[in-house]
Length: 524
Image 1: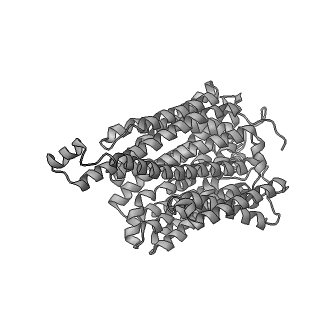
Image 2: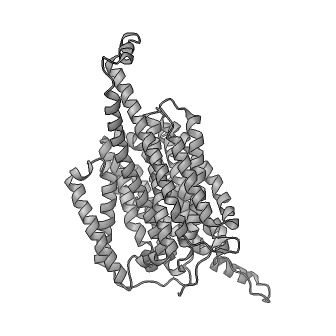
Image 3: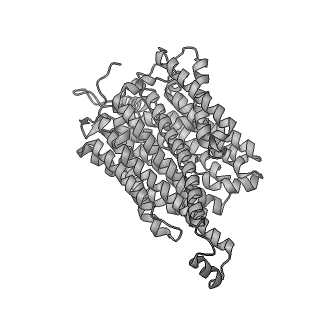
């Protein structure tokens, strides 16, 4: 633990002993602040650039397809490094690894702001992604292990403020910066935060006593298989819609590469006594069940994080700032619900709290499926607020239950895998929802346009009495088709969350102390 107590019956410590104790066991509050600074930087940067891509494209003279690699490159680097979190921590030490990741992320942020071509920016974003991809799982492992079992739900509530609120406030912050300043500031604001986080890491983060440094030779084959497999999966999910899925030879080839590489990697790692990624954490029932629910939560969080800005801008005509403000109620509601959820699991079975979160999220997305092109800010406000409130109830107990059984020496590895699973769930959600939105829109347009004929009295009246044109009429049809498509995929999200609710019964929940799930007694 990070906080130490004098042994019962021991005399009062001297001033020198107190200083030594504080150095060896930094205050929990300072450990928490340190890891949250790094976490928030990495999380916000995942979504903050989304509202600035058009401005970047215009400034750098690139196409929209090319500038899309600014977001894709960052995520590709993220998913490559996430599952290696446990191995890298063991090899370099937790403090050294976390501090190095902050340095890489901060320096890359500076370079991103100085980029003069789109491919320069993409290259720097990939470097930034390698640094940022490790910050989230490492921060989670540090917090989970630093707090005693009875306070871990509270620690995960604090962590959740960054992990769940970050993606929501990213577009808001990005919209304000883009509309009032320049896109370069999106990256430059990371520099002072990164410097402070680095210095605090050196001052307050310690390697746990049980962490054994791994000096064994690097498994180059395993590393190559993992990199090829995970990167290929992410590329297919990110670019499949743009390249028309399996009509593209690139998508077909990378799908084959992903399947072959990941199957070979899993077989190799399962039988390796010193694996790069310890897949045996899936033997913990709660970890496996929690990971599946994590895919669903990532599906909802990242999928709707993409859908809603597009809906607000393309259908409702919101500006970047207005879109950010429309998303903000969700972030505020999540921040409010995190401590409520933390207290709820002290009195209730955490599985019931998780189920409540899943069902509230389902209600919110179904409610949002009623929105049409005439909606205003307040029509969006309440379902978005409920959606954010639901995420707080979902994240806190789910993380606590998922990691509660994992042995402490496997924690860094487990958090890396869990973060990767949630990220891939989000990418899968984005890919599926983009595909379905396009298909639903095409189907709705065909159905609606089939009624736009001269024999239709409503069409005749519109052209004759309202002096409308055929072009305006077909534009109205397209808007209605777009609304129908977005409403359809939002309601599909609701159905998926409802269907995933029974998975909570596979989780284990043991109340200890204040009610957090406690680790099971496992051999070290």
